[in-house]
Image (cartoon, rainbow, N blue to C red; front, side, top):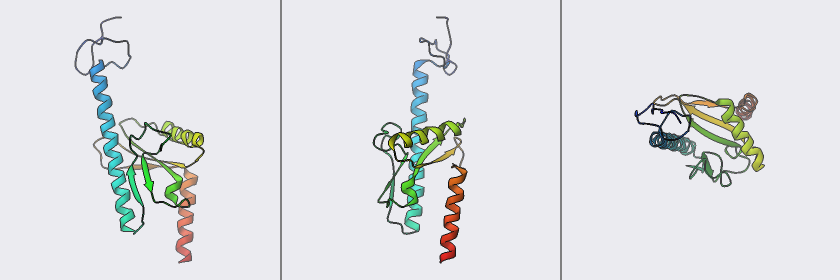
Amino acid sequence: MSNRICSKCGDDITDDKKSGLCPPCRSKMGRNNKRKGSAQELRLSKMFQKYFDKYELPYKVRRTPRSGAIHEFEPSDLLFIGVPKDSIFSGIHVESKVGHNWFIEDWYEKAKQIELERGTNREPVIITRKPNKSQDFLIVDTEFIIKLLCEIETLRKDE
């Protein structure tokens, strides 16, 4: 193995990984990414809860414990509690992502695949943002959002 230098700290790289980082820097980067993701999930759960409370919906939302690690329990990053089966919230799989690089198709397909494997077939909803930015972006299937908007409009007309 040739002498390679870590691009972050300048130490020798002692393994054959291709990341360009030594094991301690790679480990720290992983911890930082996990912390960033957990903070985003917590922020989103509080935002959902704020609106549930504002509209007097009796639902609760929590960050899924160990999200991303226990797909058998709940693969979605947010756990909706007390939601009826016919609610829009019981039909979505929320994925929270924070990163400089966006892999929208990969994220969407992975969430779709997990839902197919579980037999729940919930619709993936990806909420993403760039690090250190305040703007979130919502990524959903076009047909899903058109159907949702039409259902809302129908309810408005029935009032």
